Length: 453
Figure 1 (cartoon, rainbow, N blue to C red):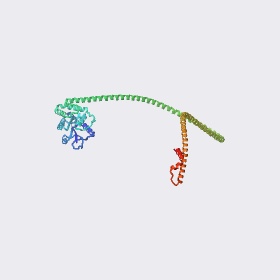
Figure 2: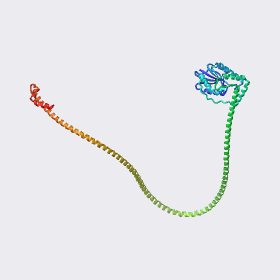
Figure 3: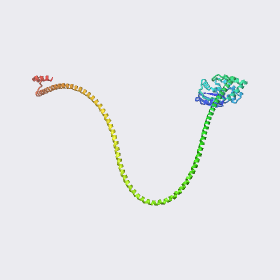
Figure 4: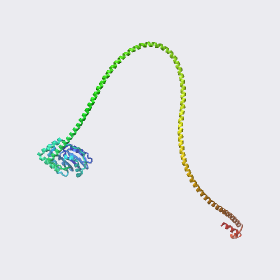
């Protein structure tokens, strides 16, 4: 088991970025950032650690691969350290790396973090340390820091010892990416180039912001003009509304005055009407009495008329019901006639279809009849042949029957003769040869045997 120790990183952003990158590696155990050595290592494979303690403590470690970082002397101002401290630390790192050339890789910090992919490829090819390609955020340096570093670099003209040590570090370091010229003039040119790039980017950003500001100002003026126009329209509308309100107030006052006058006139008319109504009520009482008697008579007549109307209504209702039943019957007849017409039309269609099918079947039957007649004539000819053959067979059979009858007669005669000879044999006391018996009727037996043959 081997361990990769990263040492000498002085920039805090670089330190955090490397720690996050190593923690993202799935096949390597990363122990984080430590400031003292320990022997806590995994049982197999590689593990990594970022060490920030004293370099003397690393002398007790064995079987490790060291990635030692260094930086330019002008960067000491960014780390709040003096040139003397920078010189002591980097002299110690150079001595350490030269004593352990096989296990130590010396790299410049800022250029390495700008091209960390090259360091991963170097570890994978030479030491079989599998690190996936990093995705680190770009770490930009502000123009103030660049100016401070450039000022510190100008002062290095009087400190040749630091410049010499830096050149020695560059010559002993692992080259990652393009060649680097460690001379002060080249570095000053590089800083001037970076400052020019910052100024150009700042000018571009300023131009962009000015364009955005001009656009926003134009939009603001446009919106202000729109608001002023809307405000003027609202003011004119408000003035018109105020004029209309004043007119309405005047109309309401006039309407109130006219309503008051009308109310007074109505009161006067009401008083006059009340007096006249009292007079009229007395007359109405008299008329009501007369009307009461007339109403009673009218009620009687109304009751009579109501009874007559009820009778007339009942008769009309009965006639209406009869008409409704007749109307229902006529509708039923109409619906039935429509159904019958539909059925008749359907039957007519079916008859047409049956007629067509009958015609087709009649044609088929005529064809089949002709075929059957042809077959019948053939069969009749065959039957005549068979009849002729049967007649011949009958003739032959008749002849055979006659011959059979004659043979049967002969057999019966022979049987009678044999019985006759058998009886004679039983009557005789001694054996008589057949030839002696036959000699008596030899002629008759010969004729019988010829017939049998």
